[in-house]
Amino acid sequence: MSKELNTDPFPIIQNTDQRKAAQTSLLAEFGTYFQLFFLAGAGWGAVVYGKTEEFKTFSIIFSAIILEAFPFMLMGALLGGFVDVFLSREQLVRILPQNPIKAIILAAFMGICFPVCECAIVPVVRKFLQKGMPLGAAVAFLLGGPIVNPLVFSSTFVAYSFSWDVPVLRTLIGASIAVGIGILINMFISESRGVLPGKGHDHHCGSCGCGHDHEILAKQPFVKKIASAFSHAALDFYDIGRFLVIGAFIAAVLQTVISRQAFFSMDTGAYASVGVMMILAFVLNLCSEADAFIAASLAPVGVPFSAQMAFMVLGPMLDIKLIIMYLGVFTKKMIFTLCFTIVFFVLFAMVVLQFALTTGAWTGVGP
Image (cartoon, rainbow, N blue to C red; front, side):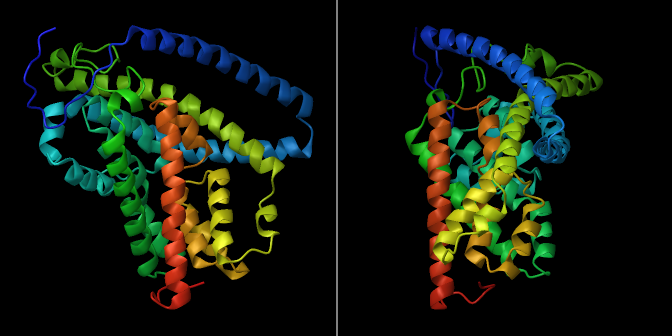
């Protein structure tokens, strides 16, 4: 194969390993059987435990998570479909700075222009990856978008009695963590090692794996482009939605087995409370547009402000349903790296915040 000079500011590493393709096929087959097993198991559980109080509690929690997430995920799938059809790779390259660090910083704040919560951002990120967005920038958008979202800013502003310092602090901490993790991913993980085959960009076929030739699509009438956008959105909604259902199921089971009161039954200090609230955010699977009201409601029972902030920062980046949804885009190594770095960065940021509150270095909203 002849080597060509690549002047692309964001070169894409292509994966041509046939063994990986075979492994992907086996995983897809396993996924099909797992989904069938999951449906059969859920049906069996409904028949056996349908009349118990625990099953009623599980049903309410599961339905609440699904009903809360599905509308936003549908919006994200539609946005991803229109991005796929109407935003070309060349336009995306012109939007992002050629410097990778600047591209990551810009991507972390793109949630201002693409106001989607974490329930909806995964299909949008996948489309950006297929368009050639660098992996580090895509991760920065994935983690920062649901926090810098203007709707999230507004809900946090209202939840904390119209205090400006809380939503501003949440936005700055969230965006900073997104940028830091994006830079690390850009330095140490390539697209071929971080993104599942077929979910990233492919120069050879000129398509996103959806069955459409985008060079031909670009020449089609506007009405056909709209139809193609909806077609892409439907495929993404199904592909990511099934992971959401499984994640919501697991989250509902855990919330049924472990009561919220159990998290607050322990006599913990300020720093330990940060860890407890991070675990609670991971288990509850709340939408980033609603979690501020839960966090603010915990202040009267003595939950420190740093722990409240940990709840509001970690939740939009990492919870059960998000990990399951990430399986449709990223490799297992990438997901493990994301989980570890997110927990480390959030924990470190909250320890610093609590230290600043304790020493009086910051006199904003306190514990």
